[in-house]
Length: 83
Image 1 (cartoon, rainbow, N blue to C red):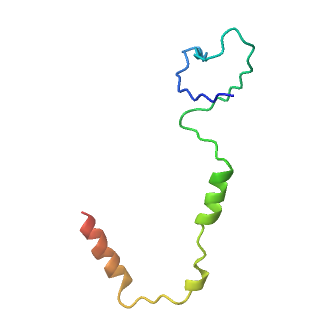
Image 2 (spheres, one colour; image 1 turned 180 degrees about the vertical axis):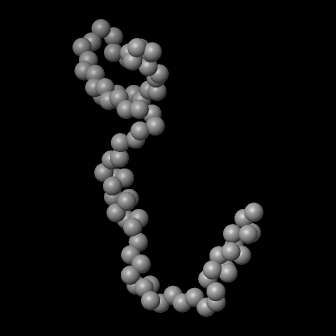
Image 3 (spheres, rainbow, N blue to C red; image 1 turned 120 degrees about the horizontal axis):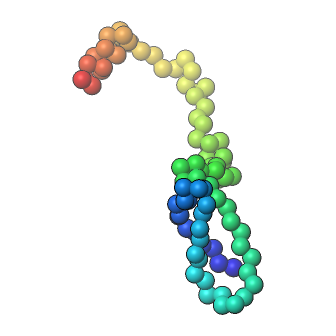
């Protein structure tokens, strides 16, 4: 079995024309074609697992962080640095 990945552009009428060179000469072959838009990626099982792992539980920090000072003044100071 050979896996081939191609990036092609469809015609104005929506047709996709493929010319795929292979090493099979005058043989019966089975072709499986999966088409997806280039910008739209279908999430697979690995992507779902990443989402599960990337969520962080901040409950152990709840009530342990304290801010001393005027939060609004500090925020204004930081925003003025961006300009």
